[in-house]
Length: 120
Image (cartoon, one colour):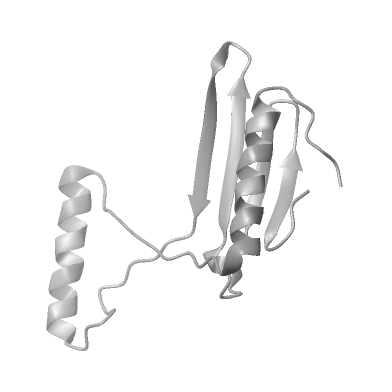
């Protein structure tokens, strides 16, 4: 079934969840993918990706005053627009890790279609 750095976390009738490990080894960088379906909307599948992300006004910056300015800008953007944008890295190294990620996506798709995933 799933091999390198991919773990099935939970499986229920209408959902399946996988955790994909970042190759750096830090569990805070892992990605969790949740596949769900709703019996009332059989043509729609839902994939939710969870990732812990962090933002720091000090990253790449050693000037305290500039860091405070960046912090204020982020606060005002969140206050007036309701969101901030974040980005984070996720390392996949080697074909085996990529193939395991793809297998998790394929198994999630099969689960949503009601097909029995291959065991083992």
